[in-house]
Image 1: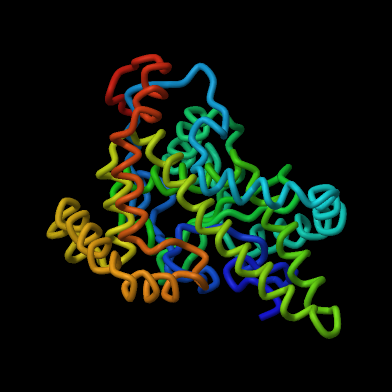
Image 2: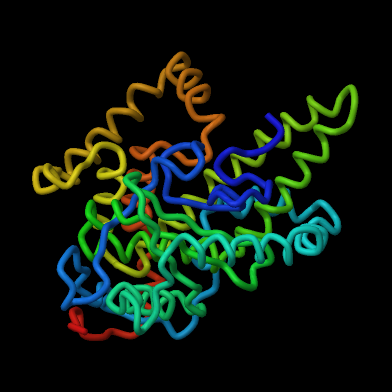
Length: 333
């Protein structure tokens, strides 16, 4: 395995280059969530209604304010390697960005004030709450529910949403997805993904111990990716400010469909998460759980649901909200 299948370093024209998604495992740009949408209110088809999801705004918000401890720990490991940040940007920044620009412009719809304006507003609101500039947002036709972020140099990231994901989620859930993707941008995850992939690929070219070194690096990369996803689930919660919305997205990705969406129960899904913890608490269960997750780029959905539920009850989360300014809870656009 010379590269990471979710976020490959190859510069092919497919959307698998240097990406983060709300996926459930390391399959390239599959098992994430997507949402279908129409181009305007007057056009027949699927539409997205904008409703401000949050009740507070932040004066200042740093990525480390919500970064998951495992993300901090694994990022420090990457930062300890001298010069990798600059090397990653220098080697792939310009070429990678050009490939992604041409790919997205050629095969997707660029969202703007004049194109899918309601979806644009959801993105702008989420970016404002996270205190970052809104990246370009593209909508791609696909039956596979998915949303992902593409970034090489960290200067011109893209967020891509598949049409089938819009059909699966409510508008609040959709904004949670966009906020999750913005979390990757806020935390500069794209740069470190590039660096880690370069390191892994380079090690595989070394005869002898190179393959063993690369395997170790790849395992470390997957650990970091899983931790990064937990961080971005927190970014989603900071925007929508309702843990059940974020957990509902994870539940729908695990086993939801539009025709049964109204029958899904978030509390039952959290009970399922707790039963997983109990079943994997024994030595044998721990071993099976470890084997089940070590090659995944994303944590299991039940574990992500439990993590965001616990963080929503934490003092850290409450402190962040206490620092914010109250606004009207619902503002129609």
